[in-house]
Length: 89
Image (cartoon, rainbow, N blue to C red; front, side, top):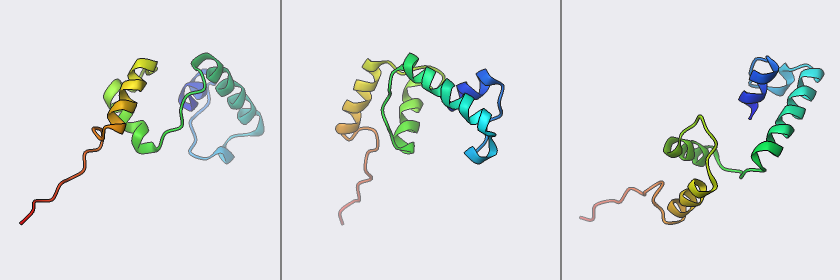
């Protein structure tokens, strides 16, 4: 959402919030809230899960509820990050 908000507002993407002026932060906050209303609230994910989600379903589009449910099923079944098994000697 930050990428899209910066693009719409014509702002560069900074790594740190302190690199934006108070006015820019206010505009970004308003735009991100607007996007939340358009997209829904979303789900908090770790960086690893977020990356895996987009590697499976694409990174340039909104993930559908059905895709997210499938992703949850795969996660809970242990299919997203299979553990490495050690050979028994």
